[in-house]
Amino acid sequence: MYSERLQNVSVLGAAGKMGSGILLLTAVEMADLSFKPENKDITYVLNAIDVSPKALNGLMEYLKVQVKKIAEKKTVQLRKLYEHRADLIENEEMINQYISDVLAIVHPVTRLEAAYDSYLIFEAVNEDENLKVKLFSQIDNNNPHTPWFFTNTSSVPIYIIDNKAQLSGRILGFHFYNPPAIQKLAELITTSQNSPEIIDFAKTFAKNLRKVIVPSNDIAGFIGNGHFMRDILYAVSEVEHLTKNMTFAEAVYCMNKISQDFLIRPMGIFQLMDYVGIDVCQFIMKVMAPHIKDEKIHCDLLDTLMSLQVKGGQNSDGSQKNGILKYEKNKPVAVYDVNVKDYVAITTFQANCDEKLGKLPDGHLPWKNAVNLKNKHEVFSKYFNNIKSMQTLGSKLALYYAQKSKAIGLKLVSDGVAHNNDDVNTVMLTGFFHAYGPINEYV
Image (cartoon, rainbow, N blue to C red):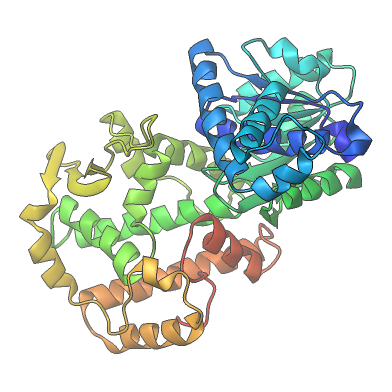
């Protein structure tokens, strides 16, 4: 059943950042299946579907480089895999053969018709509900194999796509985190219409890809973006309060520093917003808003930034585009002040803001030193006790932020988005690389 479903697969949006990673992981899994004796008579096909021939050419080069890296880490396995090949002696020969075997499965195409023969469709196109429905409907209406659809949506409720495309439960959310080839987390979003077979397949696929799978109920935004979007909204509300006593640029800098340094996160909330893309964050909130009745999921600041063409996001080489923060060598050097409609260099106000915030609490560790601690509970208990004992602006803002983050996590559980506290923490620890979960005893 598992091997048969993976016999012919298509990835929509294959040349994009998410699609390319999904394609890479799927290509390797399919190739490894093809080597098993019981599958020797199966021909595996993986259609890489995208609208741009140029992007598909770049995709194939990306695959070649990435598969080589994977092969170099499994030379012992390759020796066993190719033990019947007398012509392959050196490791390099086996690595090159493995690259060739994996890439032979991939068929780069620009026509959607290639998916008409697939048993499984991965979708990683733009976060556009209507586009997804259109593509799924067209494939399903022309595909005789009753295919399954795995959408990478990070916010659109699955049941809506299912109903509009009339897929009768043959779709679920398989939300890879960016970048899929590296990130260990995948959110599995199922509906009441899903069969046990499609869910079991998804879990097996995730296990074979060595992903940490966290189940999420089918509520807009799911766990990851459900927490992240509300985190943004809180940070922006604090910026508004701070602007009573400082400039907008200074307030943004302060809250970014609070979330990164005081709360020991890999990047500040506004840097993370830029990384994802201001346009993407705005869209996710628009998707979530109609489905969240007891909260206002809307951010005027995002609307303002978009109207000023301040979008963030990343360049094709992975470097950070300017957003609410301006970057040099991927490090923030200025803040976009919406009042003056220009970037203000951080060096012009940094010392003054740092003085207002006060020193970092005793026991502070940089994120890179804290994330892999063995005695996290002891360290963070002491650290937050120190925060509570301080009366500085920075310590108060940090404590309020941590308490709000915890409240957001608890509400995701009480609202039925997450099954339990641990699932919320796993998403934030694994998908967002936080050093500690938001639902904790520290605050």
